[in-house]
Length: 294
Image 1 (cartoon, helix red, strand yellow):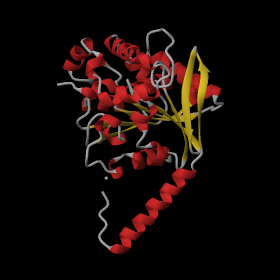
Image 2 (cartoon, one colour):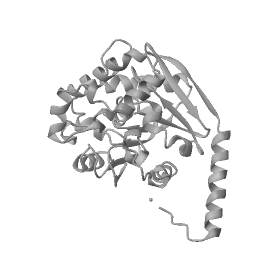
Image 3 (cartoon, one colour):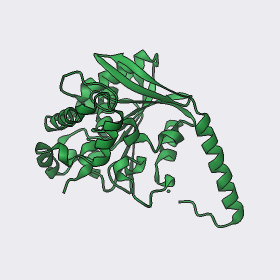
């Protein structure tokens, strides 16, 4: 059965002594202080007919974050931005009709989203960046690496779809009858809280659903043309099948593959996948940082 994660198309250290507990408290306090002092700015960029919202956290080498379908910066990446921004300039954005970015009264496409991201980087005078895309944002990242390789350094594809057979058959039947009522309440609430137009929720939903209904395979030739060093991450209970991730890994010459316990986006703390026993140590931030720092 396909459930809520559709719209996002979209490990533990045991402290055994008082000494270690005190050290952990000191480390946590230090990290909290660093986060509080972290540089932050946000704004809107004129991008291909959009007023595109973006945030910049921290400083260092640029890392772009591209959210999933139906999502905002915070719903996809709120759990990992503070850690990533301790050593990076994290540039998070919201795509057409999502969150604080307006709608341009045109259908969504992953190709157009990729062009919009490239235009934002140009606006911010960033010549080259690492990119992490989740779910639909992962598919946009694939298109960015294909269409604008000059702006891409390393890419991380988290639960990204490149071909229709990359999800269970029932996914497409569910998509064809998708309604706003099925959308996770957490995503609805998060959209309304920050939206440029709170009445645009239905528009965002319908544009995301239509894009997926009309989704066409990215050709083998185009996938194989990707030269960027690539980290592919999926969950072992993901919407994306292991076979699809393995095939992408085989096609992208400079790629690595990680299959992590959990569902769609759980390894990055996506808001609808958080469970009561969630721990920060469940997140794959160390893996991401290791990949980016090679």
